[in-house]
Length: 305
View 1 (cartoon, rainbow, N blue to C red):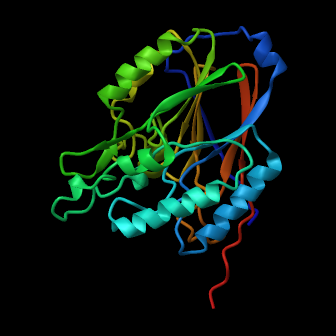
View 2: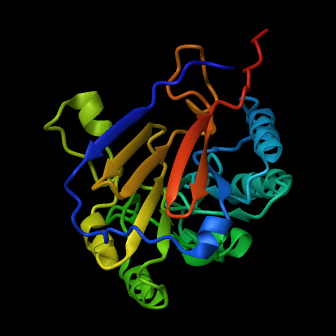
């Protein structure tokens, strides 16, 4: 379903922590690349989600990026489902994501966490309880990799509340790991982060006014602590999901905070008036510079009988 997109672009000159860099390595100049960022897929057997995701996969494969980076909420959902249902959703995601013709790097979202919203006795003793289901099936919940001069960091932005539900947050284990990881990175090397929950977003202010506050289930409450770790590094890009909202907050002429819409749009219940349109983000990198586009991949919901 092709539609005209309204993309929110905001420049804010408040983030003083990131190092300003004008040097571009020869390796980066000689190796421009693209990658796809797909967030909030919410894969399920209902609502023709399988067909829609396959359409998105086909569009990505046609564009042939170097790799795919997902932004979490890959399935719908594991938080409050039986083990059998959660197992089947993960198996479906693994099957379909295997049709990408390039490497896939996954980010964990709140909907991948098994059992946090269930209250049956001894659920926490299950061998795949919580994020173990993601780790055992899709890999580490946080990690880093390098590609053509860029350093990519994938974080787990999901924490457990005192009530047993989910909130945003980067835990102390990750903060310690991140500090060590950054010690190995040249301070001039451009860095990109992927996290399901936003570090920074305008979504609440856009919908509720300039004085409206975010709640801890929407964003990363300790975002400032985490971002300060990059104060001497060349952070260029932060990719976010969760909100089904499309925005680019460009700070200090340095860092793009891109909240990447949703592959599922309005949870696979899209109409011509729905926002956001179902889609994904293509990032095109040349040296330290990047541009991006939101791709409405053309999925048309089937007409109801």
